[in-house]
Each structure stands twice: as C-alpha cells, then as structure tokens.
Image (cartoon, helix red, strand yellow):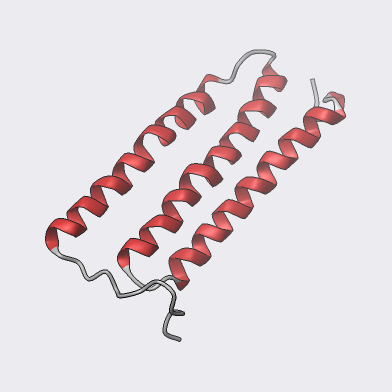
Length: 114
C-alpha cells in the first residue's frame, strides 16, 4: 500500500496534526528564548513538548497505522509516556526551584530585556 492510495481526508487530518505540532514546537521555542525567568521559561517548553510532540506523534501514529493496516504500537507507547512524564518532570523542576529559592523575576507584565 502506498501513500497515494491513502484517502484525502486522512491525509488532511495527518497534515493538520503535523502542522499543529510544528507550530506548538515553534511557539514553545520562542517562549524559551524570550521569557525572562526560570518559571516562565519552564512553561513554554513543557507545553511545546506535550502538545507539539504529541500532535506530531499522533500524526505519525495515524500514518503508520494506515500503512500497516493495524495500530502502530510504538507511537502509541511513546505518546502515552510523553503525556505522563513531561508534566510530572516540569512540576518537579518547579518544586525544586521553589525549594532552592530561585528568583521569580518580579511582575510578569514587563517585556524581557533585549
């Protein structure tokens, strides 16, 4: 079975997942580079890894499941592992930063230093 025999609707759904995942990853990367303090910077990449990589993996899961004619277990396992570990690791880093007394950087309405 080739990609050309794939239904158009499935191609569209897979493409939407891939584009959404890439956009979430881009927004998370910009957030990591532009935000001021540790706690703000922690939020961007955490959301990017969960939502961005999650969308990319779901798109991959749909594609390879269609190609093989059965559920692609590898992508499903990685997606579940990602959705469980990324928020927990971000929570643990934030708790460790609070415990160590990392500076919160003041009010969040200001723009980052350039």
